[in-house]
Length: 182
Image 1 (cartoon, rainbow, N blue to C red):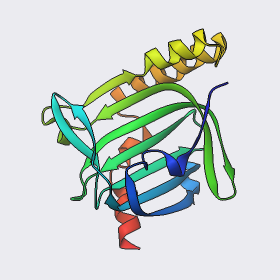
Image 2 (cartoon, rainbow, N blue to C red; image 1 turned 90 degrees about the vertical axis):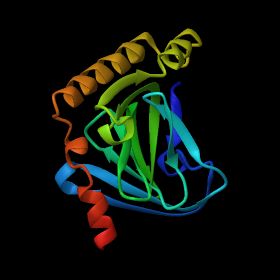
Image 3 (tube, one colour; image 1 turned 60 degrees about the vertical axis):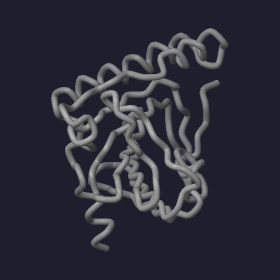
C-alpha cells in the first residue's frame, strides 16, 4: 500500500501560523493550493548546488497544483521576495477531494526542479527518493507494476521539464501574482 498524504499537511510541520486557500482552475484541470506562511517554529532548509537554501520560513509561500489528469502533484517554494526557489513533484497513483481537502496516494519517487535563482548557475532536474521506492517494493508496500509506473511517470516528467513543456512550470508566478492581487 502506498502512502496516503493530505496535501494541506505536506511541508507544514514547522509552520505555526498560516493561511491555506484552495480553488479549482478549470483551464488547467487542476486544483491550486496556496499555503501562505506567517510564522514558523524553525526554518526548513535544503541544499541546492552546495548551498543551504531556506524553502519554508516566515512570509514564504508554498503554492501547489494538484492536476486531475496527471500522476503527480507539484509544490512550488516561493521566498518572501516572490522568487521561485524550487519545484517539487510527488509522483502519485491518484488524488481525490474529500471534505474540501485533497488526499493523494504517494508513490515515493519525486522529481525536483531547481531554478536558476536558487542554484545561482543553471536550472537543474533531480530524481530523488529512489531508495524509498525500492524499499517500498521490497517491503510489499507497492507492487512491481506500481514501481515501474512510478519510474515511467518520473522519466516522462523529467523529459517534459527538460524540453520546457511542463504547463505548471511554464506558468511561473502567474497564479501567485493573481492570488496576491485578489
